[in-house]
Structure formats: structure tokens, C-alpha cells
Amino acid sequence: DADILVKELMQTRGYPVGDFEQRAGDISVDHPEVVSNYRAAREIAMRNNAGKATTEDIRQAMVHYRSLFEELLQTGKPATHTEKVG
Image (cartoon, rainbow, N blue to C red; front, side):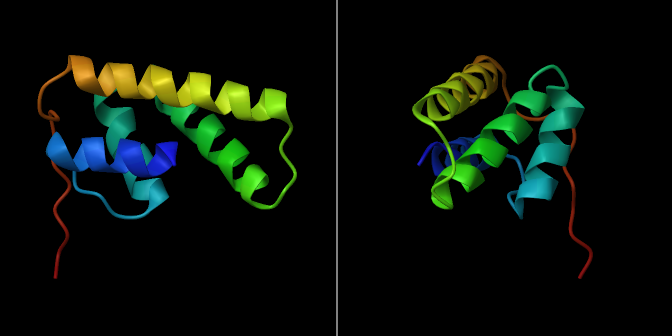
């Protein structure tokens, strides 16, 4: 699953990994140009899980995930860290 791979890469790169909205918010700080790709890919993945995505939808999701993955690989640690207050 591409979303799991992105989550693991984010964790390796030093991002806090919570739920999807937190991950998208964290990505938007350092990579605003690709956060829309992440949101679009996730939406398609959820439709696919419900059996409602076409082959073209799935292909497009992979293109979106690839764009995000490449961006995360090209950069170092995130500029900001979101700390959870306990």
C-alpha cells in the first residue's frame, strides 16, 4: 500500500506520524506543492478500498504518491516538528 510506504518514509525522515490529517498538515509546511497530490491519492485509495475506483483512478493515485515520495526523498529532515502535548 503506497500510503503505508509514504507514512514509513515520513517517519524515517523525522516527521511525527499521526493520522492522515496530521501527516498532510506536516507535509504542507515543508512541501506545499505536493500536499494536494497526497490528498488526491488518499481519496482515490479510499474509493478503491470501497470498490469504487477505476483502473485510471488507481493509476492517477500512483502518480500522485510517486510525486510525493520523490519530493520526500529529495529533502532532509522537516523544517518544523509538531509536538503532541500530553
